[in-house]
Image (cartoon, rainbow, N blue to C red; front, side, top):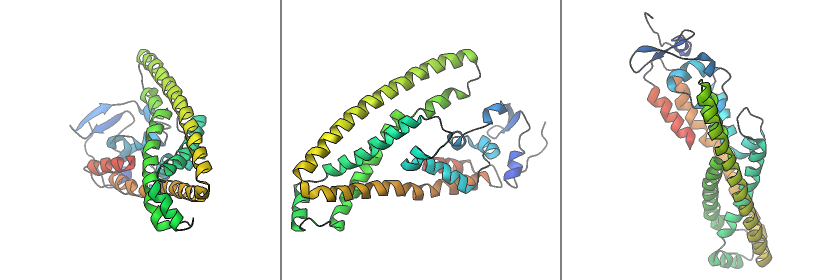
Amino acid sequence: MMSSYRYSNRNSNRNLVNKNQIFDIKDNSLTNFDEKRFQDLNDQELNSLEYEFAVIYDKRTYIQYYWSLLKKKQLILFTFIPTNDYNIITIKIALFLLSFSLYFTINGFFFSDSTMHKIYEDRGKFNLLYQIPQIIYSCIISIIINMILKKLALSENNILAIKNEDNHDKFVSKSKKIESCIMIKFILFFILGLIFMSFFFYFISCFCAVYVNTQKILIVNTFMSFLISMIYPFFISLFPGFFRIHALRANNIEKKCIYKTGNIIAII
């Protein structure tokens, strides 16, 4: 039996367990667990740990946690920075190209008759104040669509679902189902991607052919909305770490709600 527990700092929190046991906070009992499951965890696995395990195994600093969120949320970093996730690089690049084309097309949709009239009044000059709402709206819509495409294209969550399965028979059964699921997701992604890219190419070609003098404004709007979507993760990713790191370094174990709050914010 364990005689006492101290929560004075993060190191003492890690001492709550011996090699094959962890303290169950809910009912003050000891539960056996397989420590091998917590070896060589990648960023996604560490970020999704339950609080009781994160206290022990997540030894990252605030900067390291912040960087792990950036690599997941910022599209350029997610696509081109090498990481130890379980997503296919080819899919990442295809998603990046599809996302950039999406920004072009969504911005084109916002060029209405009133917008064209305003451009005519301004003699083709770029009016930032008038274009800002259009840029922001197109950015928000593109981000939401990209989130849906990511769910369809990425395989990491599917693979993590079977990674720690100990039972051989269950592992084989689940792996076959997940393999089929991933294959269906990839096929749907490439079919939808081909359809979307064909439509994007047709729409942008027609737009630029008809509105020759509006091409520059469309390009500027697209790059500005794309730039906003590339920059905002650097700011939004600052906040989850304040909750998570504070909870993991707390002097008592009652910081679980703060930890969960940080996880919820990290989803945004």
